[in-house]
Length: 157
Image (cartoon, rainbow, N blue to C red; front, side, top):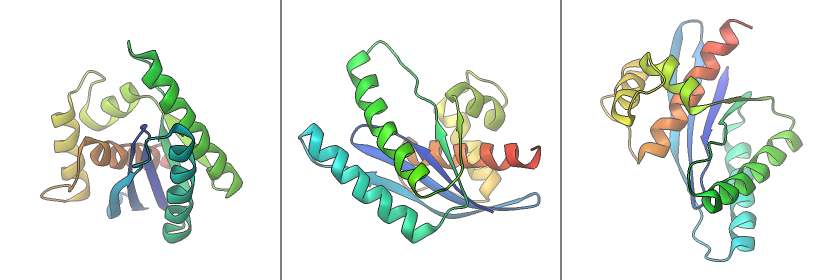
């Protein structure tokens, strides 16, 4: 099963595409959707275009999103919520099933505890997919981790 993990943000969206067959997880693709527009309206349009292209290119069978986590910066949280809304709408429109996981769930299932730091998650992601390194920032590693959690979740459904 091809599973696309998504780590949503305001100006960049991390993604990781894995293939899950039995107990084997293979990393197929990963990267960032970079949204360069300064204008909030244009950013949403650019995001929609980039995500639609990603869906058409990769043809995932399942998509997993990180649930929105509000920190002290509510303004950033609202901007991420807008981006997530666009992504969820386009996923539903494409008729691709999706799951959502909190950051704590992802950290717990990947690194063994919900308070794991980024480095612990990255180390385990590399081990699981058999990669010496993962190109890109934490957003990419997080997206791959989200996809892995979805693959494990599907095994028990």
